[in-house]
Amino acid sequence: MDFGLVLQTDPPASAVVGLMRRAERNGFRYGWTFDSAVLWQEPFVIYSRILEHTTRLRVGPMVTNPGTRTWEVTASTFATLNDMYGNRTVCGIGRGDSAMRVAGRRPNTLARLGEAIDVIRDLAEGREAVVDGNPIRIPWVRDGKLPVWMAAYGPKALALAGQKADGFILQLADPFLTEWMVKAVRQAAADAGRDPDAVTVCVAAPAYVGEDLAHAREQCRWFGGMVGNHVADLVSRYGEHSGMVPEELTAYIKDRQGYDYSHHGRADNPSTDFVPDEIVDRFCLLGPPQAHIEKLRRLREMGVDQFAVYAMHDAREATIDAYGSEIIPAINAL
Image 1 (cartoon, helix red, strand yellow):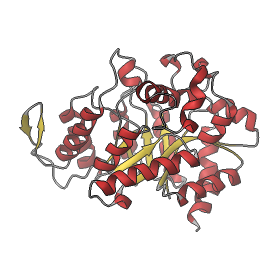
Image 2: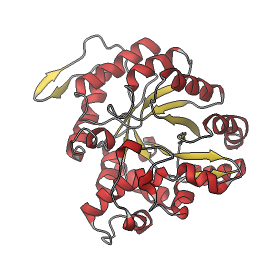
Image 3: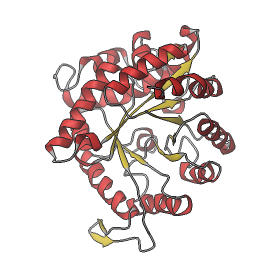
């Protein structure tokens, strides 16, 4: 199993670079960041510094979207980083939540997302693609490689990930939901004539290593609020009891009262009072190292290829170090 670190690009950027270097020293192979131009600093600028100051780490957004940048700009940016640092990027992409809504736009449609996945990958790898009706190609790309991993929760999005994406990003670590969603993605890949095992599965969630479970929950409760934005979209689209989406995912948002994006992804988010302890425990990895090891082993048995640690809490360095000294070696020993 691979491991990744997920950060917000809060200033100073040097701190983000420093944490990514720390992660690489501790055995992490991927460095991810949020991508929301109003809320945080521009990640692609920071990726260049991360790549310069690491040797093996692969970097990318978790996640970008097809709406905040034109597709040829996104592809060219990835291709430039790959040309400079040797194909060490991954394009995590989704419909867009905070990046679109904070700017007063609606998330992208799945149709637009599916088209963007193909176009961005083709352009970044040097092939011709059609953008707004015009065939274009980036002529200077040589031997470029850009895996495109799609974030998804709902049935139509899971199907699209299986049909088109090189990887599937699931932003929660609940074993029941992970098994349900991985099966849906792999079935969609098989139905599309693809090798279902060729789709990389990345589970991303907060991880907090420590004995004080109550404190860890309060530091990670924000995540249930963030996921709740996507769940609310699913409920509005499919209905609360449609059977299209498991109630294990949808039931907890019944008392949700809106969301303040100015606190998005932060431990002090006041919009997460509706998130019960049970959801925090299911969606996140909390407790002493052995608790993390046991849950990660379950996830790996379900076909998870990477666990990406959301480190938006007051124990970032300690958690990264604990993963490096105890958790990653234990997982990879078998």
